[in-house]
Image (cartoon, rainbow, N blue to C red; front, side, top):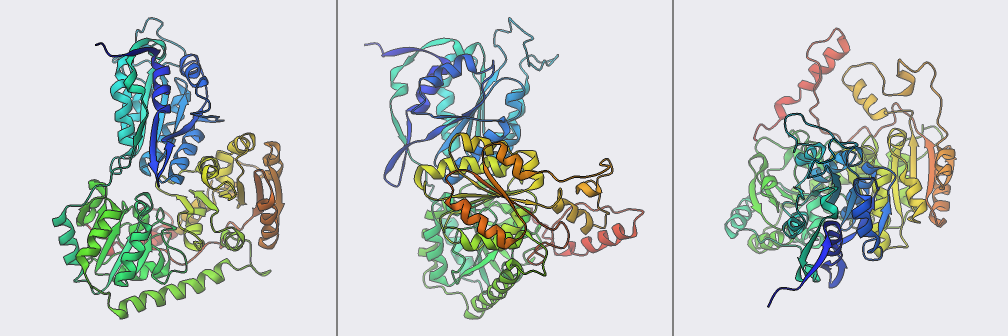
Length: 622
């Protein structure tokens, strides 16, 4: 008996297959692909567009305003779903596709699934060179889409319709794998999209997927437990992988069972509630004095679900040279960093296995007491730092404190790049688990509003009565703001907190910190700007359909935020903040950034010497 087949175009087969892939989450089934973001052009509209038209209910297509922002929205969507679901982004051949490069890099750095279905040059080459084709004189197979290879976990170019039988399952397996998770790119030549093939009908049958949980090796667990039990000053670093593994409960119970202090990474913010007695605060360059104080003295550090990036490790000065690291991570690449004792496996299963092996070990009371005392002091600083008074300039921290005190505990906070990630990480007091998205893996300006839109699409699927709160500076707003319009069009409400400090003030701060004069970061210090003027952000946001208002101080901001909460559409609140002397000035570890070893400026030379004075603390283990 011959196998039953169905004749479809390549594009039709891709869409039909995607619509029939499901995932089981907490006993419920969802389409693993929540839909897509699309901008059509000649490279994807005639064939892929035709195919998507017939699956509008199963795979809703959101019309983007910019390909890069579509990718950001897709990344934020998958982050909100804890990497259990993803969205695709489709772009036309040429600049439409190349605009996705930055968002693909963001998803890659943050280990987030996103599927890119992008137009490509004709396989037959009969019409070459075509509009928007990049010709390589020495290799006709080499094009713009090859640029995605370094920033994707899976890359393929479909040159025959049958290839998707292999490519689509492999792309999905990569995106859903806890160790290899990241973006997948599939190049779709414009002729191949419309070619037909007799596909086996079984390929399109409904399939339910589950996220794999890898059990750590028993010997690795035993070694890790043995080392942890020798600790006099242990601590836990809780990263974003704790949430992706849905291991928050296990982490908390492990810490409580052994009375072990916990600190959070930037991606791991909201692993524990602010007021949990073992939550000692965020660690690193944008962290807290409390977390950094115990990191400096800890003798054994259990790292769970973190890639230990430089802002967490203080460029590897945050820990003692003698500290021993144990890294529990699904990815082998991350588990072995800086001579860590690796435990390769799922965070939930790994913590349970460690708990069994740790038996009745208890952290010495004086160490836990020291950690709690440091956190108490930090809490007092945050209260003062976020408080508003008439004798203070407007600051990021004040605005954060005001909103923090008024928002619902399940509201979602989204922020990226600039000064706000540091200010939110240090000053936001977590009200509920998994409610903070600080994108600092790629530190990408422009993610804020686009990511807020994607996060809101995901949030509306399960918590439609809660809000997505976007924090954005004027610099990032000017860079990418068009998804305010997208959110209004699609009725996916966001509350956008736009804090205007007159340019790229955080980089101006870094410039000053290394002894340089202010130059080209603030509008007032740009030599090619004869006379700076203020942008009317309120009018600009209103022109895109949002409700918008400008406030003059944090108290007015609080009243405006209440109005925003009551509103049913995207609401933008604008407030000026000080560019100088308005930053959170505590909680920072050293951070390596190249400073001039030779300069005509005495200030620059002095700053270089001061910066380098901390280098002896830097661990040299690879």
